[in-house]
Length: 149
Image (tube, rainbow, N blue to C red; front, side, top):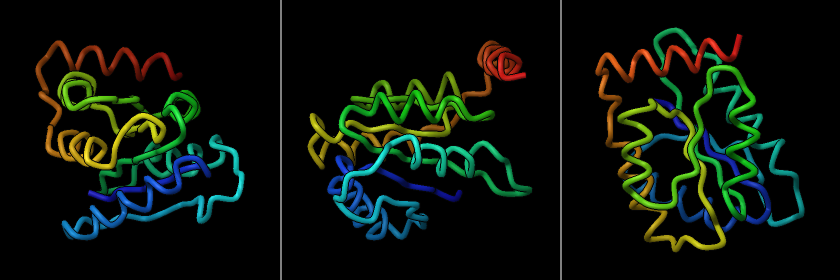
């Protein structure tokens, strides 16, 4: 699995901590920016990650992690890209259910209210939870995909 990670200036510090967390677990990722705390616009980074995730590459399943002050802006922007199902998960239960039931492929995080420890637990839960592949969930995800056409 390939992970693309991005943040705006307000998510930068948490993103850097998450990169360290992923690297210590030998999880490969690509950082698409921001690369500093200089003021930046979250839609730019949401687009960079979402396009990598939404455009399925042969044999590769890509997922994304996006971070801004509330996680909401990133979620809204990422969900505009075809093939993306982004969730703003504020706890592990939301992270797990979004993967199991909705096959989310972009995790958005809130840098203002989440601690680093909470963010790590949410990421771990999200990455560790597979899509359930139950018929009702497959049917629902297909209906979401049809909305994109």
